[in-house]
Amino acid sequence: MKKIVIATLSFMIMSFAFAQPGRPRGPGGQYSERMEMMMIWKLTDHLELSEEQAEKFFPSMRLHQKQVLEIRKEEKELFSPTFAKVKKGDQISKSEVNKLLNKVESFEQKKIKTRTDFIKKSGDILNPTQQVKLMMFEPHIRDQLQDRMKERYKPPMRGGNPKGKRRF
Image (cartoon, rainbow, N blue to C red; front, side, top):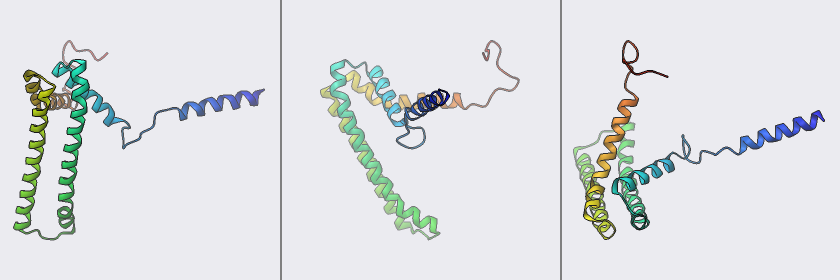
């Protein structure tokens, strides 16, 4: 009887251990999915989207994000040979730097063009006020995140907690 109870308990413990969600991508697990869901929620709230608008808008937004990721990937590949040279200790000429700068400038122009095209195309789905809010969303959310990071990682005040703020 004792062996059966021990076997059953060990089986239950093992099943609970294997039932935990995994970490499919990198440290932190499903971090990118959670970030995307938060961004969709914030964007829906910021733009005040109706259900019909959201059904049409978010697929086009995902397509835009894929295009931007492709541009960033190409840009990253552009830098890898130059970084390899720098790591080896090789000298880089001014002409190579100028070529690299010209290519970087073209990638920045591509990013700007895809963003403006996306915002123009969103005019079929969004009203003009929502389009302006869409243009302002990225800087707005970036500022919010910076403020949160500053607040979170701010060094503690000397002398303990400020008056009126209790720890517990």
